Image (tube, rainbow, N blue to C red; front, side, top):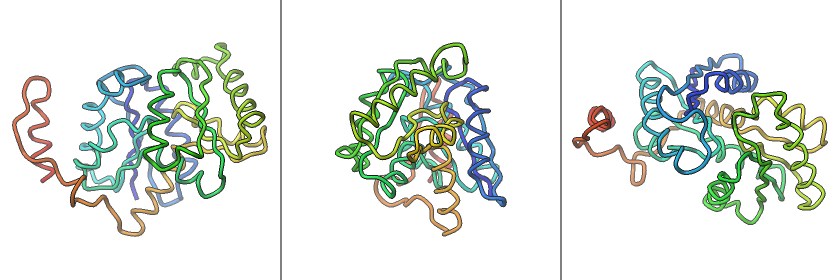
Length: 248
């Protein structure tokens, strides 16, 4: 089984962190192919960055599907471009926010998502509502730029731990979801430190992708995720004319 893991930002070092978490979660018969977008922002923090990262993300998923990957994971906690990718691709596509919350729902009633920048708060709260988890989730913001997670001198790790501690003490949550793919390498360490389940969406999405492929399930092409209608795209979007036609 081959699972494509796409980092939709352009920071290759973050892809390495994501890839390591994906491979740690994957079964022995699963190959992880981790790729970095060549188009878009260095990090995704809010709606503007999200929008500009989607074309590069879709290109990578289409290339992975053509190369024979069995499923794809979008490694951004905003579930960037998830609906568009599911409409385009025939293989299953997983978003790490949806995967993390669906897994957390099995093991806890009250859940805290601890994320990075304040720009992420509302998008993540909206995703929790969309996924039916709005009443069970509190979103906590550590006030750190995404790329600070890669700098051990930034103090990001301490601020992340402070928010987890606050969520446990004041929100009385029972599990923690790490609200950024760049935190993927911290889950096991934090779980041991705080004594509650700590869920990394990358690992959760990889395990769900394996399950879907093993069960022979893929995204329904009836209704919302029907293949895009072939049409002409112009300007920098011109290559998507071909993508839409191939998806039919």
